[in-house]
Structure formats: structure tokens, C-alpha cells
Image (cartoon, rainbow, N blue to C red; front, side, top):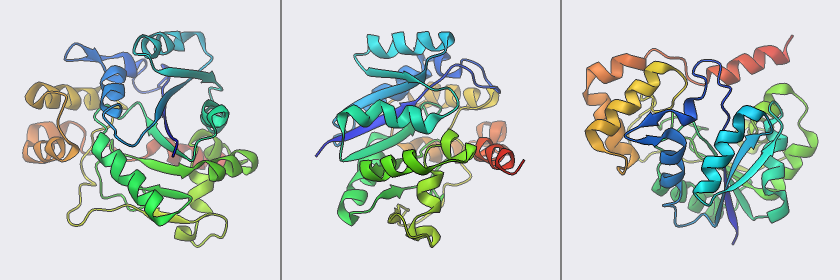
Length: 254
């Protein structure tokens, strides 16, 4: 079974420009992110999907130096960029990851893949019921479903954020086009934990976690440390989750 992971990366972040090339512990966030993904036992290939903008040349160079495939495409139509990155490979499943999640957990990635395959669904994610930390988002998509979304998604929010057309039209959301499964926790709720990087204060959180725990721990170790250290939690606990998607929804309605 061919399972290709695609991680999106670009330099033009509005709140923290060039964030994926910021360094923590002597490595860029993108390198930490890639090296953690490569610990997956289920992924057969990894592609960094960046843009054709000149400023993203640095991302392509870094990925290639790590022997990772690179696809360069549209800045704004991320769905097209994502689809084109994997279409020549025609995988069975595609795993969507984003490079603003430097501490993404390979074991968690594999668990979501296994759940998707076992349930034989078009879409499986730990974001449908958001009990995992922000920054541990994993979406597993059957390639045929991705192709359907690529052909039919028209809203800016659907094209910019890749998967809304799929989960909005899934049986999880009372739709009829796709089947979906929520991947949740057996117990507990880590929704308040923010391990993604969108702003300078998020970068400070990751810096402190890596300084205290290094770069090789599982997601729960980082999350528990975050929750047990009020000084770290206070840095970004009041940040709105999925703010970018909310802005895109507003643009759809203009």
C-alpha cells in the first residue's frame, strides 16, 4: 500500500514571516518537522509542497538537502498544489501535514493511518473532534477522495485549506459524498494545548519545550509539560485556534 505524506510549507506567513526557517536547538523548524515525520513506519514517501514564489527557494533547498521530494505550485490554491504534488504517484492514501507543526508525532501519524485503513473511509482525522493539541493535526485522505475535491471544490476556503470540501461533504457532517471517521483519545482532552507556530510567542513555546525536553519526545510528553508549566502556557494559551480558516470563511461570504 502506497501512503504519501505531504507537508505544506511557505515563507510568506503574515504573523511570523519565514517561520519554518526559524531555528530552535540548532535546527530549523522545518528540519525538525521533517525528521520527526520520517520516523513514521507507515508512510512510504514524503513530499514538501511549497510555492513557486522566489522566497520559497530556501524551503526547496533545505528539503532537497534532506533528500525529500519537493513540489512547487500555487501560492493561494493550496488544494491544487497538494493534489499536483501526489498525482503522479497515484497513492492509495495521502497524509496531510503542515510545517507549522514542528513537533508532529510519527506514532500519532501511524495511528491515524491505521484507523483510516481499518475503517476503509475516505477521510480520517484527529481534527474532527479536536481533543489533541493544536500542532498535532493529522489528516488521512483516500487519494480518490482528494481527486474528487480537487475537481469540485470552488470556494476560496476549500482551496486554501485543502480538506474542507471533503469533511463538509462527509457522513460525519451529514453529507453524502465521502465517508469519514474521527480519531479521538480514549480519555482526556488536550484541546487547550497549543504546539503550533503562527506567532513569535508560539516560537518561544517550542523553544522552551525543546530546551527542556529535546526534540525526540512523544506528543503527550510535550503537552503534559506545557500544561504543568504555567509560565509556558501563559505565552500563547489565549490564541484563537484555526484563525486562518475562520478568515477564509469570511472571505467566502464577501
